Image (cartoon, rainbow, N blue to C red; front, side, top):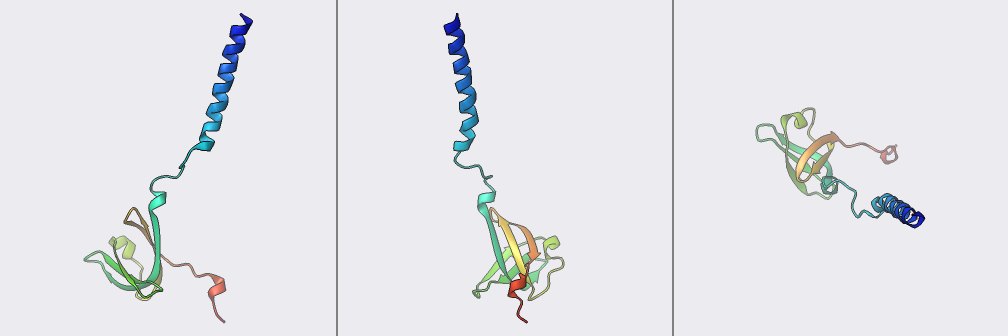
Length: 106
């Protein structure tokens, strides 16, 4: 009887230990949407609320066009530095670019 109880307790112990270790060996714990996030920075070239389009010019001179809502266009100005965040090809936010204090020239 002692052998059976020792075997059962050993099996339960090993099962509980392996269940605790298994999450440490999981391959990818990121959500699928986090892997597809793209952030584009640039200056506002044009905005068209009727078409729902926003065109920005990046630092390298290339222009990108985005489909946006009127809410995202609200408050933007021409030549303003902005940051467009996209998740899985859809614009999720349009915000003014943050200026780093080290970049200010006196």
